[in-house]
Length: 269
View (tube, rainbow, N blue to C red):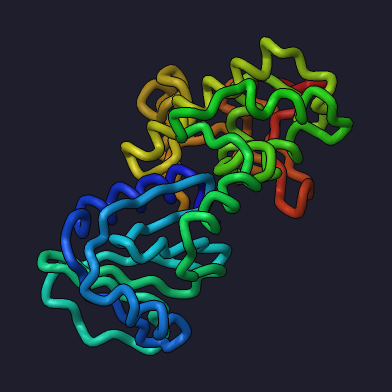
């Protein structure tokens, strides 16, 4: 499932390709046909992201709410748009680009009020300007739940996925099994600030990189990481490989329905 930086990048990409212009809207698959007909030839005048939720705003016609889930994919292309396949839930076609959406968990036309309701049920997103460490702290500081699980709870911190969770905890030397209520406020403020910086970098580069300069391949004389997620990381998907800092084999275990990765030495309780 894409992490929050990908969704914020998609919002910018839609504005860049279609913003302020009338677009053709269709649903070759048929599941979004009625809504597509209402939006066809309307101007796409806004795009917004909150956590893993993308919103495309059309003039006086509401918002297309998209959640990619585990299998959703967005693909952009240049003109001319090829004939669509019947797996395309939503197609946008503009003068200089087209977009195909396949396999999303959610693709629905919603009102302003319904959009507000989605925002209200989501936690603080490090990439939204109005969000701050204060927003999530009350729930984290009272919780007996592990910090690793809390970071994945989209009602508390929105947009953080398995990669950012593992990496930010490693970068701050925090045991992932530490209960939220045992975390200091100073430590939480540092984690939040790091998430803001890392995720903004993810939007800019369209990939996740979390290693510090002294641990990059060139500095350490090691080969670059090869992984379909891309980017240089400390522990994510590095099970049994030596920690880049201390050399201890990286461990993994299931937590909050996902695989957790951590260094038992650098993140000792």
